Image (tube, rainbow, N blue to C red; front, side, top):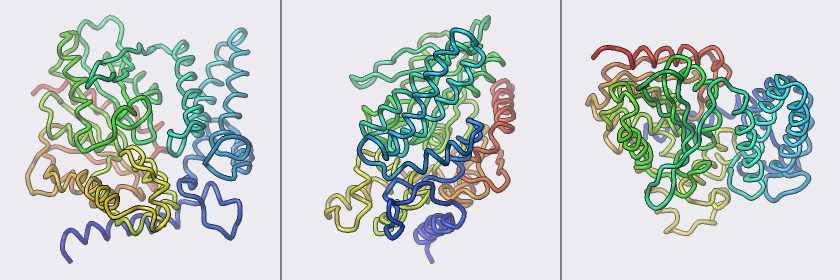
Length: 416
């Protein structure tokens, strides 16, 4: 079996195996019908929300109201979560006048609820209403934190990249770290990371990947790290930061670009690849899409298709795409592969700076072969695989994040 088919097999195997461990979060309105495309979320996301709210019964009750993801109004995913988020936000606004600590906690809960509401696409009008609530909560929370962000824009390609910048106080020329999430992540989610780094004297610039959040002016493409490079250019030109100590953190799709940047941009001194996509994810046969989009890992595929500028609903039903559309998407998807680009899998050491690779041992999205490819391409990588966790090991992050940031700061401060 040649390497090409081995990669196809590894991808399909990881997705199929995931079905036994990632239960449906949203069933179809009729048990006789398959779940709707994009409507199946991993139980870990719902468990995470229940933990943040301290109310599992409320999450189950809200989920039970949902009948689909399209449209807006009662029974629609984005609407039901938005309605709950608005209740928490209203209570937080009330507490803000009397008990700021309680208000802060309620705003954080509302943030988590609104985030659930903008999944899976953060694209439809209903999802974008939830996203607006999410960003509104981030702005309100910003008033309570020790290291608040400043928002500004960087012009690029006749558009604007929106930046959230956190700077440590009293540091004349701090090190700089760029931060990005994944296809459904957001710059507003990094307050724990920025707090740790800022407390260690490191500035953090967060932004949304091309095709995501407030960067939807661009579609995701293999060269979308051009946003990262433009941002680094901007900060380098200010001469306000120590460019001998520049780092990058990327999660999921953000981890994909983190690996690319680690190989290509010599200004970086250390990089964290948190569950980054590498190769197998981009090798899914089109014929498998209708099935995959009805699985838990398929919600991430659904989101990625949207980020690339395609309508995932058209991939969910056999025969909807014409031959040209099929060929265009297949060509684009495969061009994302870091094997095809020669960054990994070539036998060469393309990454010569410290690289931290982090993931769960049961990730249905990024398999062990993907991780091995990155390790083999790096001269100095550390790999942390966590327990029985899935994609990005979210249930381990509260304990692991401080160690991740300590690793990064140590590498940035390391003498060459």
